[in-house]
Length: 479
Image (cartoon, rainbow, N blue to C red):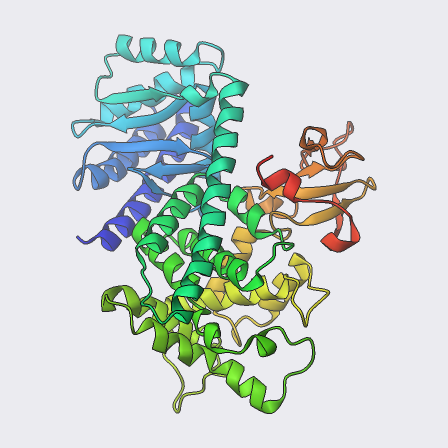
């Protein structure tokens, strides 16, 4: 079983395990252990557990950020599995459990005793200690737990968040710098080195799989100089986000990032006067602009390692080819669209439409750009990738400035993991002193009023950054 097959197996088997774990817990809460419904649920659970243990042991369920992992493979938070995954996360967090490890010898009786004991322990200050003591008393030795140390205090959480912001800022701006260095390398007629790009994209994968919101927040800040460099990094990030949400392996997500980072490398061959033109290009100028896809392939073909060059070459060539084979470059008989290219097309369009450019002084707000992508699903864009992208970005992507029905203005800081609340993301209300991040007030848009008949706050509309005076950099950049 190769790496990709291994990841696919663990995702499938992991979702099956969590689904049966959820169903068994619900049944155990309703009936005694000798009830037939409980016994049938335990049979199903033990079978799902055995599927994993037959291939590798132990089977470890771990909470990481807002996600659940099986043997360090993140489970996709899709609509069909949201309830089971969130239930398991909540029950583990209530008892300060970071991970549950099932040994190869875990029996059906072990699983039943473990769940019965777990659910009998009330959440509280010493829940983890009480749980481990009770498991010892019940003779459950095949199942072991790890304490959720990060829940010890708010200070630890704040330290972790700052470290994540620090890491996100560092890798983002190092990658922007790298794109500039690569462009200079090409102008100097030297060969592109891909080693640093690999290292940076691997760091991005780690951050995305911990908390994708910080890097997405940085990608939403459109006031940076050097558009070409920043655009390449944003397309890289957005492409990796989609690849991760589609369940690709860590190595494939990083490969997607490298390919997307080089997607516009051919623009080094296009005169600056054309790239920065504020008016409509002439037919001749437009033809030259379209050739940046072929120029990119030419440049990437000079890389020393053909293995490293293949994905970037196809993405550079195809990222402006539409699903219906319109776009450019044209090819008799049409193109066979590679997956990485189709992903990059969505990312490239979205970032371009939402960015300030010399010929686009008034870019689209994120929700309007998403609407364009959705409306052109099946024509320009791959419908499966569009669905993945919109689910990842939400109706109001991280970094969007929104107006609430209270008249307050807020910045979206994280998506709501529950798909039924896709229109109610996590936000921070911006006060008059918007330059002081400590004055930004977190708000729960799922919170209801006293009579529980209406929500306290709802999003009315998205506002373009330039119309608000709000500096999002305060929230996402290091102080």
